[in-house]
Length: 249
Image (cartoon, rainbow, N blue to C red; front, side, top):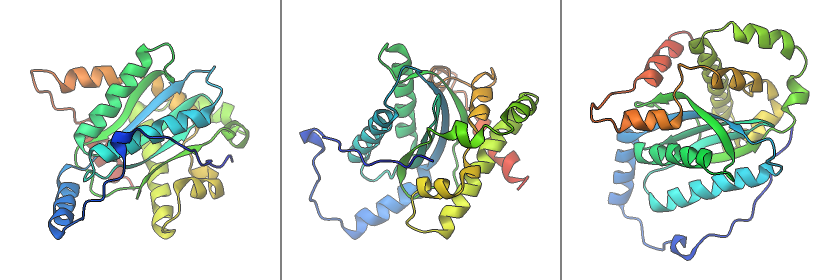
């Protein structure tokens, strides 16, 4: 498996580290926001085949998360970005406004010729995340997944095609829950290191491909249109999927 590499990123002056002291009130306020507004978003996207430097893609999202963290210093952003040869799987745990910004970013990227992604679908969204899967945000380059997962993919891929969208999403959630369990046992270890030692925990690329073709899943643009609808439609797909999934494990 390819290990994530360190990326040197230059930030603008307006994002310089603040040196203000942290009071007990600040800590309490941060804990209160953590309990009230924490949400989770899982997005699947297909990358452009001519995007040669996947490390640059990871650095792009790392830079974006860094900037968001500076702008929302009490809103802790955690998650994992898995970058495959042709796809990416992004799990973000953060307040609603940050998730909305990330979805808008996906929409903008699809509209730009130089954007990194061609299409994206929302696989999962929940409004009431009980606890985080990750302690921080990080990304993992999984560029050799075809080698590790090639054996038996043809047969398994056909079986995946017969699965319902709900089952495919539950497969993704199951892999992430198992990864989260390993992270609980190995404190201060990045998800990438755990996946290097346990490649079977990585969501297969073929599952992402199947989910991108499912009409039941919304694109970022469709989700944002419904989210901003004057009818105030409440999207509960993620919550329903979460309850269904948790009742089976």
